[in-house]
Image: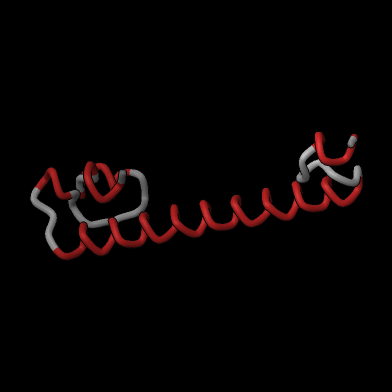
Length: 76
């Protein structure tokens, strides 16, 4: 969101004067670079959450023996 909405006046007032103007306020390469950083961060968070969730479900499946298998096959 910083890549779209930042304005130098407000960034300086919040003690972060290095932020570029956002794309909606005439920002150019700096705003695109900031957008790339934000997209990369979101992708890393999504990959981490997916991996941790997958491992957690796999461990639960091992613990209760069969959460990830077909129940009908086990009872017949």
